[in-house]
Structures are given as structure tokens and as C-alpha cells.
Length: 236
Length: 236
DNA sequence: CAACATGGTAAACGAACGTTCAGGCGGATG
DNA sequence: CATCCGCCTGAACGTTCGTTTACCATGTTG
Image (tube, rainbow over all chains, first blue to last red; front, side, top):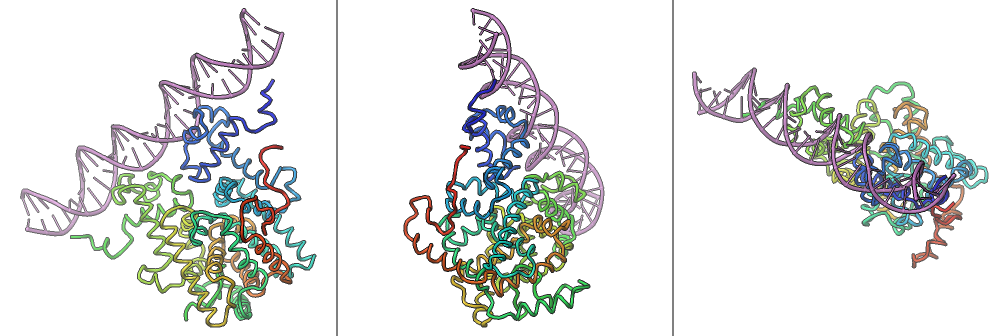
């Protein structure tokens, strides 16, 4: 009834088209990529792309699903997994996974449901990790577990999402295993010891927050830092 | 010789078009936004858009420059400024600055030269801040100042870049001042005390890095960021 | 007053896009 | 051997896009 290679294997023409699409969507973006370009890269006719995926949107959906599954492993293992493992697996072999990295980086900043699904999965994994590490005494009890897990997730994916700026800043052509190695210790140092010599900012912020918990009228001139960037006496 | 309002003021038709473009480019993306849509939102004809900005790319360039200048303050003050001040100013009044936030969030993950310029400016400001705070004894001496500054910058902009996921995760419709307030203390706590109870991860990573400092031939079998499961292809 | 630059529009053009259609090829089926 | 069906293509269709062209109104200039 069917071609066997279609059922089990995945090196079919359909897969080649999908890979080409992941490649181009990741590098150029969805709207900037034409069906013709995908077809050309896969070595087929544009009509065949539509024949396999119904439409360009269908192709995107298939790519989304494929990348998410590659990220989280097989769908069955979705629940148990620690997503940071997947990120590590990717980053350990950046060159091989670059198309997937590019694609998911773009996906995470898009508005697609697949982006939400992927982010939620990573966040869930991070939350589990926080719970486990706190229970094991490896991690201190954070002030707010869910907010902490959220920002740990953000901090985990931002080198992926902004890999271009990371590579540029490190003086490299593109994200590489070497750059990742160079970043490991400083980041772990931050997570282990923090950065500030004392807790003056922490106290200042606490007081400021207590003061401004109600209104938000003035532009926050003595709002220590309601932003992620470390606070400082900017007015000095 | 010239219309005065064009020279000094900025509430001209040209500015209306530019604002409409920033609005749409930020919300829908550049490629997904049509010149006709910009013109319609600005209440003018599509031809006038081209008349003022030469082309759609010219319009993008003008928007890039405008947003960067809004971010860094006037161009004159570009050198002295601390960009985190700008981020704080924006986040303190999220609703008013939302179009600019959306636009620069999209810009930071794009490949435009303006994105590099903006990121470099923020990074430079953060580096200066690190130097100052270390000199003042507020901040410990980091293991690697430039890498630390880079990641502080990444961590600073990621709530902007991924505002959609931040808002979703905090159970909000969109990024709000309230969500930012809720995040302040946990983040500052991380920056002040770190997260881990001891330095076992730090030591482990240090040893792993020392072991693999040389070669990179094999697939990173004893990489610090190593994972139990080596990369696998499509075979089920 | 004539000449002209400025700010603006309506209509159309050529190109490129996503998609459709009619059909060819080749192996499995009866 | 004839049939059928899945894979695949070339050519075209309709649409929409960015852009161009011709033209109008207004107020400033010499």
C-alpha cells in the first residue's frame, strides 16, 4: 500500500525538503524564505513541496514539530526530560546542530504556538531541576522559585537566541564550542558566588519596592532597577 | 527654503509614517509588513512612503536609526551614556514605550548592522559599569571581565527580546511594570548571593575544562557540558 | 504674475510569490 | 499485459508586493 521507506526511514524526499526548509527558515526567516528556494535547495520542484506539505504554512508546521521533537527527544520522553540536557547536547556539537539551533532561536522569539510549547517544555524542565537541586541541598532556596526558574530558562536560551551577538562579541565568525568553553567558568562563578561584594543593592531595591508598591507615577528615578541589568548609581 | 516644522519639529507626516513603520515592523516583522499597511496606518498613500524614504529598505534604515537614537538618547550623548538607564527608563513605563521595545527586541535578533551597533553600545555601557563597580569595590573581580560583561548584557536584554514568553510565564497578557517588579528581587538575589549552596559545580567544571582544554577532535565525550546521550540521527 | 519647489495622490507596471493543473514516469497489483 | 497509484515535473494562474509614473494643489520666490 505504501512505500516502505516512507513509513520507517526518514531519508525520503519529504525529509530532504523539510531539512532544506529548516535550514532556510533558520537562516533567513520564514517570511523571507520562498517555497522556490526551499525546493531548489532540496533539488525538487516547487510543486512537490506543496504536494508533500499542502502549503507553505503546512511546511512551517512540519518544521516546527520536527525541531521541537529533535530538541526534546522523542515525544514520548517529553515529560521526563531535562531540557538543559538537550541544549548541552546541541552546544557540545554546535556545527552539526547549527540549522536546528538557528531555527529554534528564531522560533523562540516568534509568536507561534510551537514556540510557546518549546519554551514551556524547557521552563518545565528547569523548574523540575530547581526543585530537585533545592531538595538535594545543592541550590539555596530562591526567593521565588517560579520567577527564578523563568529567568534561569531565559539565561539558558539567550546564548542560543542571540548567538550572532555572542559570536561577534567573542571575536568569532559564529557560535563555536570554543566560545562556549570560554563562557562556562564566568557563568558558573556568577551562579555560585554572585557578583556583588555586598548586599547594598539588594537592600536598596527591597526598600524601594516597599515604597513604590502602590503607585507608579514618576518615572522611577529612585527605582533601583526594575530591569534585569544590574543596578548601579547611574546618576553619579 | 524649507518648511520650518520639518527642520525642527518632528510631528510631520514623515514622522507619522516612521512611527507607523516602527509600530508594524515591531509587531509583525519587517518582511511581513507591507508598505501599503504602513501607509494605511499613517493615513497616507503608499507612494508617499517611497517619496519620503526612497524605498522600503530606506524606511527600515530610518526606523533603525530612530529607535537606536531613542534608546541611547541623543546621538551626542552616545559615548557617555549608560544604556541600562535607557532600559530602565523604558521598562519603567512599558506601555508608552511598547512599540520601541517590540522593535528593538526584533532588531536585536536580526542581522542588521543597526542591531550590532545597538548591541555594541549596550555592551560598552555594561563594560564601563563593570569596570566602575569593580573599582568602587561594589562588584567582585570577575573571572573574565569581558565575558562577564557580555553575559550581563545578554541577561539584561533577554527579558526584552523574549518579552512574550516572560509575560506568558508570569500569567500576564503582555510585559508589564508589575511583572518587572516581581522579578527584581529574585534577580538581584542571584547577582548578590548566587544560587548554588556550594561550589561543587564550579570545581567540577574547572576540572572538566582542564581535561579537555586541548583537542576537540572527538565528539566531546568528556566535555564539561556533556550529556549522557550522544547526538542521534533520524533512526528511531 | 510667472516659475518653481514641496507635499501629496491615483493608477498602473513588472516582478515574484504561493498555489493549481494536467500530465509523465515507474513500480506494484490483478 | 493492462491497470492503477504514488511520486514528481513544467507551465501556468491569480494575487500581491515594491516601485514608477504622471499629475494635482499649494505657497514661496524672483
